[in-house]
Length: 310
Image (tube, rainbow, N blue to C red; front, side):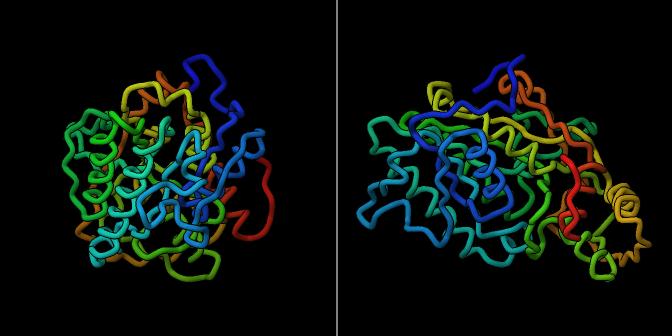
């Protein structure tokens, strides 16, 4: 782990590889690329690779050999979690089996769990929530993520752990999934000449984090962090953005006239979800570097097949 004053982009190669669980997703792909570009070994685990836990509950070689496990995998979105509790239960069981298998390893790796800022309630005074804010998840998705956090905390005497609560991560290659990823859905609608669907109040406020900034924080976490106490760290841009403002920036970036279709709010949406990132800066030496307009432009250019300099 890097400290304040150190380069958060620097990744120290280690003898034990980093295992990226959920390497087929937006963050997983980007994290593998970043680690490998730095000279570190990254092992990708997806739905198509062999299971990480054997039928007898012992870890498969890839899991046993890892120096750090970045657990990014999920089969649900905020929308799907409301209607498919069986998927939530399956995700939970898979994570628990992984932790229990790691608990049998003589020197288990650090497990970095990608969670969500939706696990905490709104601050009530408009200020971003710290990691110590009361956990009052208001959706099935947030409750599912909080349950995983608690499983990792419960096993922290045996398996080193860190929870990374992230805001809305976006970027090139974000797959379209129901109820998830407003940036991806809106840019795809612009490209296809369809109306943009806005659910609820245009003043709904979020924090949008560019994928390169997200993986910069993850890539800086190495096996040496396994010796530290269990921790929770917020990873966010630190910039509050309403849906209305997001529309305006997308209009500027795409240089298109937008047709917006207002839809009723969804029960799992919160009016505001903002995270305090001071702990990430103090403990990881990390801050987001990509302004919203820049990240959206890169994502739009990638969607249209035209490169834009980082």
